[in-house]
Image 1 (cartoon, helix red, strand yellow):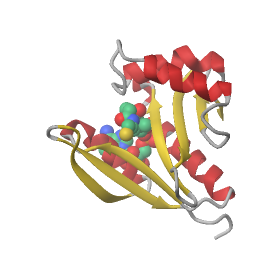
Image 2: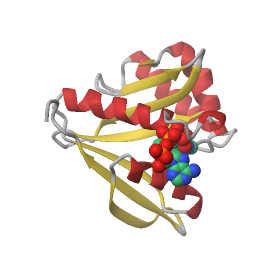
Image 3: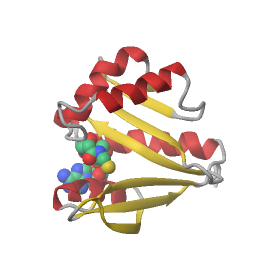
Image 4: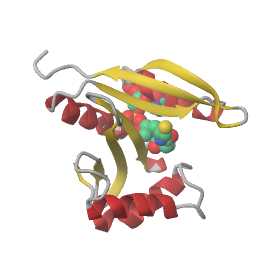
Length: 159
Ligand SMILES: CC(C)(COP(=O)(O)OP(=O)(O)OC[C@H]1O[C@@H](n2cnc3c(N)ncnc32)[C@H](O)[C@@H]1OP(=O)(O)O)[C@@H](O)C(=O)NCCC(=O)NCCS
């Protein structure tokens, strides 16, 4: 079941970020702070966290509007517990984000990832979900690690 993320999910989301390699074990403070700000309402009303709950949190997605745009959003985080990957949970989380945004009349969803070989599976995931590789910023994350921006136009409901 995909539901809004609650403060009780915080520990599980930090563990997910570490287990999926999105955060080093000793560097989860930033993510904890983002979640705390979200629950305190200081990130902005539109910032959206959803949890995939299957007897506890097993996946998470976080999306928010891109500043200074009209209807352009960014998927800042998506993660599925490693032992449950490859079963459609990530695609379901992404679809949930797209449908939520499309229903509100939003236009575009972007996602930034890495160009490193170890992220090929993630890039294949976005391609499979209908995203186009739109841009590449060479050596963005660090020397030798490009940022790859994927883009999907959100279909208006009923179209
Ligand atoms: C990326 C991630 C969220 C995808 O979630 P998932 O539940 O594993 O993905 P799904 O099972 O929904 O896969 C959907 C599609 O992605 C593609 N995909 C999934 N695993 C793949 C693999 N090993 N190789 C190639 N493509 C793959 C497939 O095309 C799949 O479609 P199919 O089931 O019809 O074959 C998940 O793997 C994850 O948490 N990765 C680590 C964290 C991460 O990299 N997050 C993104 C940061 S930018």
